[in-house]
Image 1 (cartoon, rainbow, N blue to C red):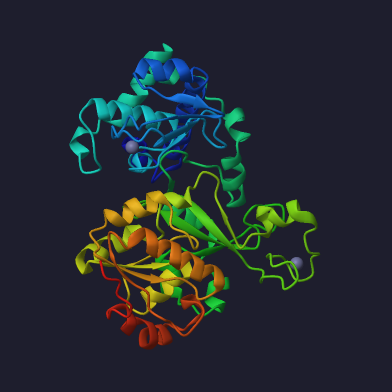
Image 2: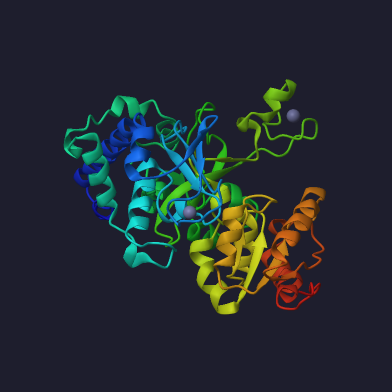
Length: 404
Ligand SMILES: [Zn+2]
Ligand SMILES: [Zn+2]
């Protein structure tokens, strides 16, 4: 995999090679997923089929929580999508079937924790293992691009204007940037600086087709931990919240009708690329991880806009939840961050207060929690100057310290 990453950056010829190799890997995954039960047996992994998914203790970090690992034979983008809910092993190895095999082989090689990078076997070992299992050579696997094109991810990348180069490893940041109107006119109009939008590669979708997923939205790429590749994107609608239906749509368009219609993602404030598990990551981790470790503190906010505003005001240790709730893998990430203090800065609305209570309960055993009272409803709605004078002083001073 690392080879494809390196190859994919420059010329068209290499990009094509990369796309072809990705198609082969996808085809390999697809074929292997039809023999999943046999494959699990061959790997020596003990999972039980429960409804539509396989469940069991995680065979990658070797835990004993009997429902830590879930594996879905029928993923919506890639078959064999899996998740380790206690240690987040799928974040180290990819959440695809090949990633799963990679993880199990690494476990068998002595891998137990993220830090054990030396025990991690090479990704190509997993590819070879699956090829041996299926009795095929990688370059003989039918690279069924027609099949791949029916998949959702192609539709999404088509929205951004080109053929996808990635599935497993993330997209090239430069490629994604080249498909957007950058820096985002939408966020410039909301008072964010061109510099901050450029730093975070925030750009408006160019599509003029209302049927496109990201039409009339601003695309916010989510980077991997190194800040090099784009693992997915979340996109904010340009429409305001409708006063009648409380969903987001054009002012001159009719409100959605009926409960089902209301829930359609097209009316959501934010839409994610398919396959992006926002609950598995924290926005801005790539940039904030070092400052968090150095300062021993992390500022937890709701959305990317809050992160940018804080960053404009000189706060470098903020990460966003993509919402108002904290998920298990995000908690694991925080616990591994080296922070002792968590400053919780959710929006001051009703849902935000509910989120605060829940997050406080979950984190206060591990961290010193601070929950500053901020006058404005939402940090993202303040100017950078207001944040500097009204919020930043609250971050470094305990306002409501919870005794441990
Ligand atoms: Zn695990
Ligand atoms: Zn409406």
